[in-house]
Length: 277
Image (cartoon, rainbow, N blue to C red; front, side, top):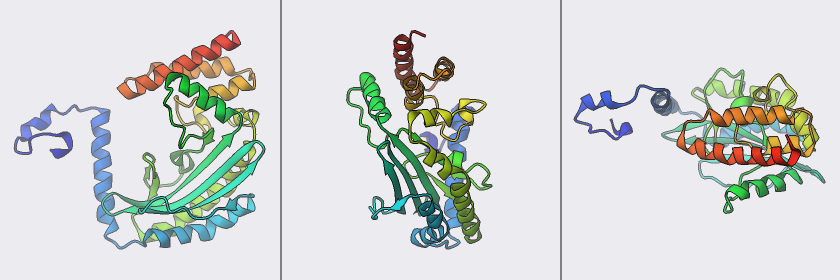
């Protein structure tokens, strides 16, 4: 009842709650968090112990790919993280491995896989500030592999949203298989893709799949960097890419997403004007 801001004494009010996908998602997320809290009473290792087990398998793979370990930052009391960088005149690539736990919410392992390309990054920020002059680019990157895309094939649940997304762990015996899954995914797929992106041309090539959304780099319809990369390279599929993004924007119904869609539609209009499409 509290979840829907209803009077806890009037159960008939539950009938006023819409039976739609949004409500079902809220209920599902709450149940997942409650179940996670219950499972965590099984005394899983703390984040530091889980992190060390992940590093034992993943760090050799990352360093062999040319990424250098960075000094610890300690950005969160709820997590333990290690960052690796690979850089050049083209920009930089970043891998972050972390373990996170919050007593009443989640416990798990996660990673961030990001790329910053110049001058594409600078152009992306400039274009976003046309719609929002106060836009803060903190956390913005040119390309990344979302956690839920990386985790495809893993049988357990993923919490893909928020500042600290994780692949949930419910059992002690899940930790070793998950660290093996992450190390193998880095070695076989994620790091080769990340290393290949040293230019806007290479970024466009990563989307040379059956559809844009099939690429590991696809982050949704509000990603300014993708259409800008296709524009910078004068890619022959630029018009088709703009059509895909426009269709995605027109399908948005959520009020926040409608604002984002409006801004991206403005970018699409500018690109079409510049390229006379």
